[in-house]
Image (cartoon, rainbow, N blue to C red; front, side):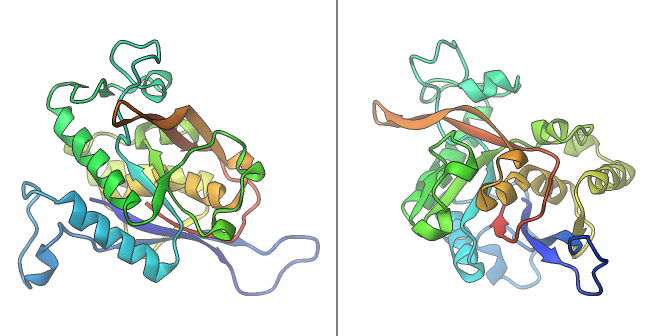
Amino acid sequence: MGVVILSRVQQQGKVRFGRAPAVTIGCEIVAFGPPGLESEPGRLPSAREPVDAEILAGRLNHLCAMREIRVMMLDGPQAWKSVGNGLAYARGCERQLNISTKTGLPGMAKPGPYRHFAEFCMDLYDALCRRGWRRLETHASPARSEPAEAAGQRVLVESYPHAAWRSLGLKPLVAKRRARVSDLAEAYAALRTVAPIVTNRPPNHDQLQAIVAGLPGLALEAHDPAGVRIVGNPPRREAGHWREGYIVLPLPPSAPVPLRWLN
């Protein structure tokens, strides 16, 4: 699991005449083991131990409340396919991005084992919504949308790391099981040529994916239409289930705007 808090950080020091102050994207990597394990000192978390969506939602919500974060990027499907979207096995956003995993009608996913992860993700979205969050509902330009902070709204946004790298014009990070330290270093260096990111420690695979997939949150909260690509159809309730939903990708950043968000 990779949890990273990003914020615009204005550099201190002299400003040259005619130039804007230098701004970096601060990436604070947060220690965030499986729920329940943090109370057992000395115990190392196991990747095979189950994670409860309700507990995870509570911890994420608490972290966001403490840090005044209003845009949360999540890597995982938020809903099932709509019956009338014209596709046999996928949501519109999955088809547009040619995603290999598909969320079909309720209870159906491809490949089969992916269904358990998809259901966990949807449970997490629902648990966060019960705590006052909402799924991103509009495809309108962020510049024309009502400011989330002004309305007191907290927004959940679906991300997809593989497509996020490509959207920035970069080679996607290799799969976690095949990634070497050199692969992480190469991808990290490439990302820094596009975005002025600074991390509080070297990111691992999950954390590096969280950083690149979460970059659109900066533009969404700043209402910068040049910073995001929004793919898919609006989320909606259909026959008792959430269907469709947007995936939001980063575009190479332009002018920096102060904000905070979590992925």
